[in-house]
Image 1 (cartoon, rainbow, N blue to C red):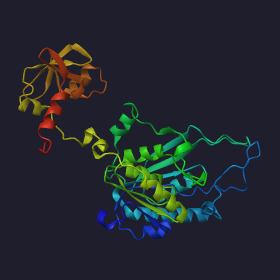
Image 2 (cartoon, rainbow, N blue to C red):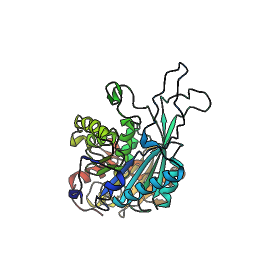
Image 3 (cartoon, one colour):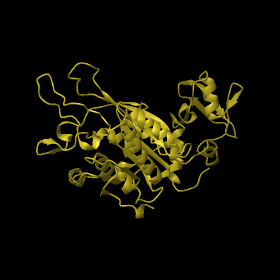
Image 4 (cartoon, rainbow, N blue to C red):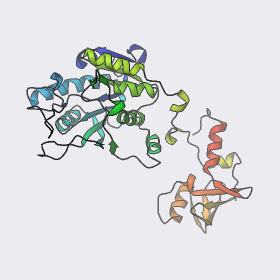
Length: 363
């Protein structure tokens, strides 16, 4: 199916019309940054009377909520058609539009997996002092089909976050300074999203070689990050000036070397039962294991792979949980074995089996 797609290219035109020309069920991930319908009534000025470069472009103007809702339903319906059954959709917005967009997302039978709050570390202040400073935007992450398998690289995100599970509040600055794309000294695009935001989106929900589509391509942040991370990308954009800007930007991007894109997600590795360590002789029936949290607590391995401690019997996971007073326990990390006078995790033996037979089918 990918061979039928215009990979790594920007398509000129209205996204709803262009999407209709693409094959059904062909795209892995969609990231959409649609017009927010900001409804600005007048120009904004700072206290020093300098004009704020706000979003007042024609593409963000709608006559009514009904018109905006119809526009939203049309492009979301077109996106749904090209998204794979296992695909996911990201949509970003502000308080002006995200609640209307979210309702339509659900009306079209997408299943929302998360809402992410992008907390801007350097937000624009509310110059008139009549409201709270608007310091965040919201991303909705939804799957096309409830219950279908979808990509979520949980451990990659945990690793990115200093081995702590990544939360749904993302502290990321606006695209400023050298990251901001400019034309003749002015902003190339008024709503350019930071690369860090797209880095998390694509690293978490796609894999190298996947196809990522952005129906409102703008300055091309999605394409730039996708190219960097070894993903294929397709952009759709109406404005030819933005297309030229994005194309030049993406052409300057250097992809990450393929070997550096590897992500080791434990759930994708072969399942190796504890009993396989006995069958291969890496451990022996009758051998003593030591509880990692308290090495004075030991258990003996039975021939069937169960562990025994003072008359209590269980799997490596179950017995560890019992001995830890019901605390959740991963048996592969909970138990140590002794070899040459040193104790190490039984998980090292499982890793050794995986490396010896990387292509062998294991139950």
